[in-house]
Amino acid sequence: MSPRLQVLRLQDYCVRYALSAIHDRLQNCKDDLHELHNVFIATLHSGIRQQLINQAFIEYRRDTCLMIDIVCLLMDSSVRSVVPKPVSGFLNSTQCHKLFSLMDRLDATGLNELKVAVYSRNKMAVDPSFKVTVEWSALVRLNSLMTRGLAANLHTLMLRNACDNNILGALGRAALNLKKLDISDNWLIDEEGISRLLFKDPNCVRFPVDLDSCESWILKEMSAIADENLTRCCQTLQEVRIQDTNTSGISVLMLLMFIKNLESLGGFLYYR
Image 1 (tube, one colour):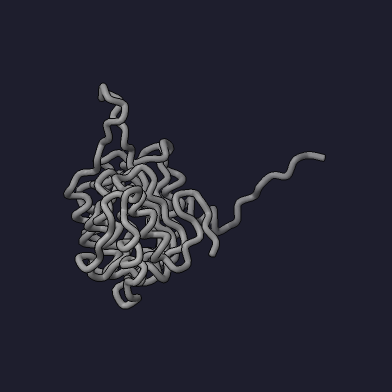
Image 2 (cartoon, one colour; image 1 turned 90 degrees about the horizontal axis):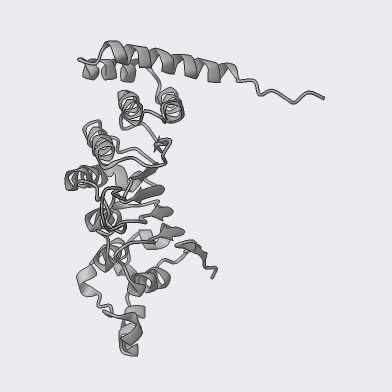
């Protein structure tokens, strides 16, 4: 019996054809992208634009800059998901800066899902542990989006090598529905960032410097922290990944103590 052949649906053909037409239009109108963006926003329903964005992440994964240009032609506050899928699996720092800057300018505050991984190793460095950090200005743009409404809408967030303590602070202040958080591979994140994610007033919380040598009274004091000082993230988060960050066992302890419905932490499962 001959193998089954997958047949595309009519809708899939239409999405691919429309995306190809957008690509051709982009190549011919590079000098007036703002007007072209306004045309697409005015004529295409947000659900259709989301399908086109999802397809663009697949069709143009070998040309990341082109992928970002096409996606941003279709983006506004009604878009719900941005998950770039470059063939390497990573954006570089320049591409990340471009994406965050365009998202900020286009007010992409309605996202429920944002997944960005940035390449963190410098092949030219003598020390293989040397990390390439995303430009500070890119994180400022993302933080601006967070404070303007993005944090309140997110339920899935992955920022590998593209996050800092300020962004975690914005999530702690404003996130309402965040369930999955992956901030792996970020050396700009430490105990301060985790405390800002978990506590409304981190300055009122004392935590030990070294988990191995901390005294029992500090742990008792931490366990007595009132729920009123916990952020909404402590209620909603279910999965957290903090591998390869500048955190210590203190951060792991805080996450285990104060996130009420935690199921997975850094790849390990915890059931209560």
